[in-house]
Length: 618
Image (tube, rainbow, N blue to C red; front, side, top):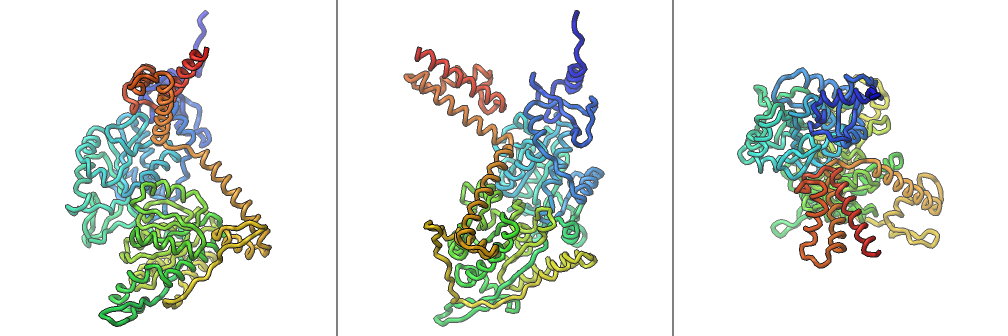
């Protein structure tokens, strides 16, 4: 007697037929290993009813299961509701740096894809390469969405879209114009103010490339440009100001405890120089004539006694913060790459710590940012690589050592230190800056917004935080000297100078001997390293990075097999690919292999090599 199919099997068949044999997430064809997935997870109250089930590939379901979609903040939920109710082709979201624009935008992307995964794609455009990696990682980690960031010839299997820079899209307008025509495309233009309608800018080519997209979400924390030109796809009022479709401002973000309050310390100084054969002094302070202050600013941020004292004060504050938040970090913003290298050397001398240096010419800039984000290194020195959109929540102290004075650049710099950890104890950040009248005016604008946010608050802790935002200035003249520790010897061991600084701090804080402080430091470092290794092992890489890794593993397996199995053939490497890899998978371009196919091919090559070695020995 023929057995009737189980209820589970009938449900699988019904879901498969309803999906027409395709993934509900990407529209890819399902293989025999496809899996049932709950649209609304059980943990969130989702039922086991067939109406809550969908078909996904195994890789998609595992990635979705590993993802942990965040709980939206109140403003993000409001924005999403406004977006859903709008039918505008272009929608401008203005939210200050650190408020959570990325998560808000990715929530829109996730919703867009799930409504029609077969016909829809998402194109995310960002200003810099580090932001490409950041968006890709967050999309995979939080939503299980996989984006490709290279090899833009077509949409790859398992990918819901692409992430690229404004520079890249401007260089291949026709291709992206065709993609937006063929698919129902959502374009997310991050920090859209980087473009303008000027013919010398990316704006006109951007409008041509994505003008045919179904919808466009434009985001910015500073929706204006220093050159006063207009931003593509943005509406303006009669006075020439951007009209936001949803705005999340500074006062509300502070009231919601979404960002930190910033405390400013601005420092004066004197630059002595020789002009026309005679020595003269240029005073830098907020009371100085602006022309003289401008002349002094560019010189005073060069390595010398002014920067020495500013860095010393900033480092002292950072060490004070790290006593309660051990992974807190500081950022030094410099003028250019050469300046960054010289300031990094001075910072190392002042603090006895080795900072990370991130400049645009460094091919490892993106990986260095990722490493610094999860490390315990106190300081990072950069020019523009960590200025906008880069999310490093442990940055709390900023040393502003650049001659850039525009409100746009200054606000973006402050945006690097306002992203808090969403805890009650993480509500303050600190900026150390030259006492230039324009910079001080920018700082006062931010302080006024902070005061506005708290004027009606009764929370005493908030009141105390605002009262601390005006720190008295102190005068500084050239000619000061720095005398630091050359290191210490503990229990017969020569301790590195940068470690010695931390040991002294622990001894001072805990009232113990240097020997005990050194042992505490060693235990703390061991615990920190262990914690990082655990975090690193749990966090899964985005699909594109996994594909790159597996292609490398397969290539190395083929190379080993080639040398062992066909030592006398000049084309042995290609021969192994042809006979073992492509015949096994039945595809003739390794870039078309899925993650599972790459792993199968590698295993097949290894098995064939082992069989060959066994037969050779026998």
